[in-house]
Image (cartoon, rainbow, N blue to C red; front, side, top):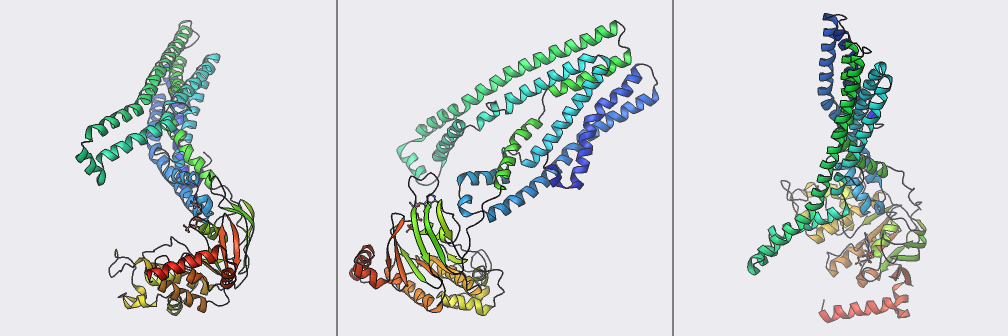
Length: 562
Ligand SMILES: Nc1ncnc2c1ncn2[C@@H]1O[C@H](COP(=O)(O)OP(=O)(O)OP(=O)(O)O)[C@@H](O)[C@H]1O
């Protein structure tokens, strides 16, 4: 309910009036009803009763759309906050499957119910309870113990229904259980395979697998539906009990009231009031649909709370230099750390190359160098960086925008964009793009052009160079930036980059040793730590891993004649 103010007074005020109206007008209506029944007037009490009933109907009818508007308002604010939080969230946290599940819950709700719907439903529940309490008060005004007894019973009945339906272990929670989710996935998978196109469809027809898959699907669906059916039968039985108790309680209440009236302790007006008040109390005991909204909407609300929880401050930023000391990093649920007590210092202006086998942890190292991941152990002092990732982004925007996105806050001119393209060896793109820098890099747009993998890679490199030119304190970090380029193109691009970025810090990750050899220092990453480091000549003279790999690659290139 504390979420309600998020929807703004303009939406909440009418909703609050309508909920209150729907809650109190019923009990208030018992006053003119009592007067009418006891002969204390006709026109005025009848008019008041009619007005109360009509107003209550109106409030009940309008409460739904007003509540929906409040829920939309709350959800809009929460979604914006969640989106802002996820954009600012450390990558490592964002990549966690638990956080991804929370983001899905927060943005799309659980079973169609959102945090806003839960807040509105909680307000509706409070209104229903208020109506029951007022009804009980009216009853107690005439038979002191009856109101309390009826209310306690109604509270217990309401709770029982809630537990049965939406409580932990209730029938609705069964559908969300891990076991049911697994059974459902299996049935969906079989249905998908049996009805899917492509190779499966061919094999099903050639090998006559139709009845095999249909039988498996039917069995899987039965396994999924059986616990649900059992759960529903239990609910029907439970409801039978609840209704039985409810009927007995109503009969008991009315018998008490009848006896009191018969004995002359309750006059007609009071009797009429008590009957209506008892019905209001018992209505609470019959449960309400809001309990589903509250129960399901609470899940997204919890997800929002977790996502908006404060995050630890990012590692401190240095000035052009990078310093990792004793850094250990492991992915969640991984048996061993990818990086293990690694020490790496990159001096300002140094050009460092990192080499290592596939899976050695080079990309992980890049994410630590750029502050996207934080070490489990050790410290990482990073500096602002312009990065080209292995899986760089291909923005369906103009070539100019693709480059300028390196630093949108920098008011660079076309000359800056061209300079970045030149450093990245991408200037010749302009010969083939009809609209020059303004050409959209997507066929989905009129006059747009698609680029080859290698051309896209050069654009991504130009974006990073543009960012580095916009702020020279940024280090240029490139992770396999030339995987789509042939060996000669890669060499050319790097020669140009190294010549054009003198005095800037650069970290280059590449599997091509001919490119790497010009770096000031080369480090070999193996077993989570740095096992060799030095200049090319030094490492070749040492005759270690680097020298071995270098010769292997050189031999292959010579043998292939490339
Ligand atoms: N998001 C992730 N979650 C779990 N494990 C991961 C994740 N990313 C990488 N790994 C694992 O961490 C190890 C190091 O991966 P990383 O991508 O850093 O290696 P790499 O040296 O860059 O490899 P390559 O040369 O193939 O690009 C691998 O075993 C990989 O499977």
